[in-house]
Image 1 (cartoon, helix red, strand yellow):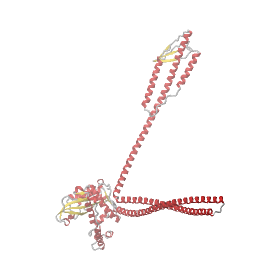
Image 2 (cartoon, rainbow, N blue to C red):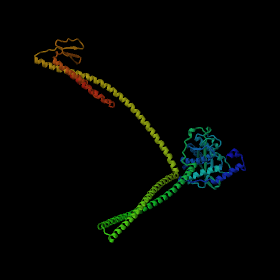
Image 3 (cartoon, rainbow, N blue to C red):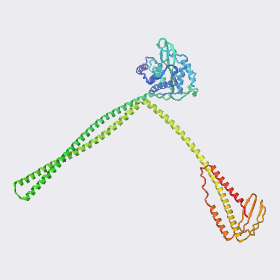
Image 4 (tube, rainbow, N blue to C red):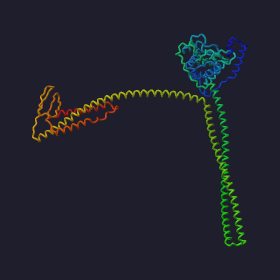
Length: 600
């Protein structure tokens, strides 16, 4: 194609070597390219134009884009992008062409007015006098004029057939150049595909009336001259859930590699199982040898015990014979023979003992050898079992990975959904964090307000406490004077004295005369409305003065005691106000009681 374009091949005749080479390549491609059906797509029925929904057109467009982009990759050309707007644009072209009853095979031209009307709906330039946006082809002609009885798989095959007619024909290659991105101006294009339908007669050598399906491949460049109102064109890309050819090749390569690794693992596992069987057999043989050695050791021990008993018996016989010789000192041949026989028996028993001892030593050596062989067999068995376990785990891992590759499509969809779910969870977590932060800020402001209110209440309480202390001192002083008066009166009665106190009233601040002849004691004032009454008291005796001083000191000590615990800052302001109210009521009561007292 590069040589064809460089030589401006559209001006070349069919005998030109470049054109001849293109024809050969096109014929070979036409023979090689075969459509691959999909069982799932066969279950999606499409019986009329109403079934060509945006979702179906999106699937057809992403399928076509995958085929186109795989070819553009070979030429280093920019990709096509399937968007909501490009799918709608392609669908509008097909609807407008269908409304015009346009038959591509009959007209042998693009329906430019229909394309312009569709372009206007999408905010594109719509005053073209020639086709600016589409590649079109007759995809199918059928004599079945009723329901289509087609599937999504059938329409994907129509897409494939249309692309094949663009790329692998021996007549023209302008459509091939368009498909390969020559008109993209080095930028990605928005792309969509759809199908128009029409009824004609004797179309494509099919006798009689036929239902014709024309494919419309719509390409929208990003160049500004094509755009009038971009707000009418939704450029949101549609995700392609179909695995690309390169991804399929990579998955197939990975699958082949993993199959090789899996087969190697299976072979290693079989070898390990064989070695494990051998080790188990060796262990069984070692156990048998150990049992035999133990039995031989038992027999040798029994023989040794018997030999030792025989030696003991022969030794006793020799001793007895020697004793007889010593006692009789006789040279009797019979006794000598008995002695000789006993010595021979002893020698024979000692020989048997040595032999049995040697047998016992040999049996112990065999036992040690058998124990060593048993230990080695156990070690080999443990190693073989560990190798077997590792091989089984490796095989399970390889089979799991093989299964994941076999179901790559489903895993890919699940992974993409997991990404979407993770993003959603992240967004929700961010919103929750912001809400928690706002709540924390609000709580901090509320705490500051409560702290300020508590400090204010505390100041009021301190002032009230000071006032209370002052009033308590006054009350205590009045009480002390009353008690002193009582004691004075009692003393006067006892001595027969008569004391007359003179009272003077001063009203509204006017002058007052006070008889101080006998008023040498403490003066006290009480208030009643606007009248102040001063009462003079007779001088106290030394004992009375001492008593009064003690009581004043006790009163002063009582008034200096710590005040009660202040309310905490988190208590309600109403509670503090209630306490202050109760305190004030009590103070008023005490003031009233003081006011009502009469001094005579």
